[in-house]
Image (cartoon, rainbow, N blue to C red; front, side):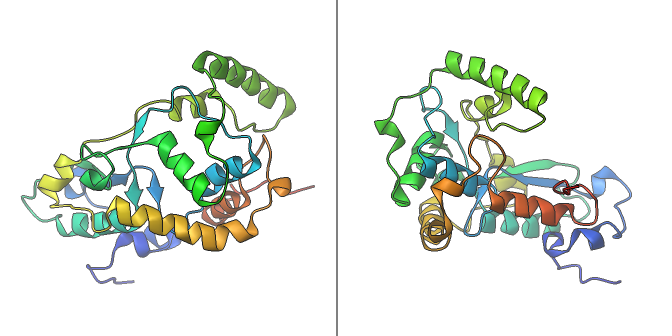
Length: 246
């Protein structure tokens, strides 16, 4: 099936992408990755964070001062389009890997925000209590509890939300220099963080919050229904979705 060269690959279904001709060499392509994608209709990041905040169980891990960068979904889509246009003979982009984020539009012009400040802002926007009014969880206690939770997960055949990976991800600095994408792809965010983040919170307040029920949340195990639904859609046809009940 011939496709127009200007059609962004991100808009195509996986079943079709699998049948597209592959470039003959890694030098004929480039890779573009976002970091912590967000936006209206997000089914992964915010639903799980907000559910934990809404139940009152969420606490700040460690000092709460770890840095993070975000990528609005429109900025990632924009980056994919301009990356495709950069695939021409002699381009500096050929064979390269790029990370794109909201860049200097973050609260810090260095290109980052403070993760727990952002999470708290999201919870407060939904009407939940501020995390900074509650006791922070010390790292040593978190590592011990996460290790115990992993043993229990293995013994019980379930998936507890607390594990060492989550502790690491929620306490480490995670922000990236996007100067290579600026230089080679001429990438600049088309949606500033201070526009995209408030817009995203408004969408969740209008559409997610009315459906939220603290008593029906997943508790200490599993993930939010929205996240599981997204996983099921992506796994359709592969047999890798939610296990079927016998």
